[in-house]
Image (tube, rainbow, N blue to C red):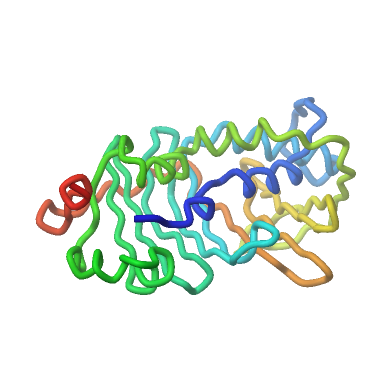
Length: 246
């Protein structure tokens, strides 16, 4: 069984966010980020993300070049738990649940057909409408474990070399009812704008990637520090992956 695990890795997404969070390494006091420079606001946002215990990330678009658009809706935390869905450019989606070292995944029919060529339909026939269940020791599920870990995501972010990317600050606006300050950088011909909450904790609330004047991807951040849903599928609603492969 083979799937496009590259789609599920946060590496490039973290790299794009790292550009938006390009910082000078200095913390700033005070709550009024409207008076700060673009780089100071980016540093505030970076610190807020580093301090978050959990976050929900939703988005769609093309986060890699060249690549296929993705759809993403995942709640994840620093304990490696997550719940949500990942889609691949209209060619299928997978529901993912991870609690501790156990992972449940339920691909839809389009995913089996398009992402697992040469055997997906047969496997789907065996699995039916149930989840595949396994642990992070299983190769197929190891990549999902990395996607679900907020620590891994933040590590990817802070390890990206960003260089001296110029940043500009825009006028205060609203993102889903939240007042936010946009900070923009333009690396390699792509315009990346990070919207940072202007009240309360200066969390990143939206990331927009544009190229040639058109929006390529939009990613929203919400539900900071809210617990990841704990519900897991009943035993009868899942198939053990090792048993299936064996």
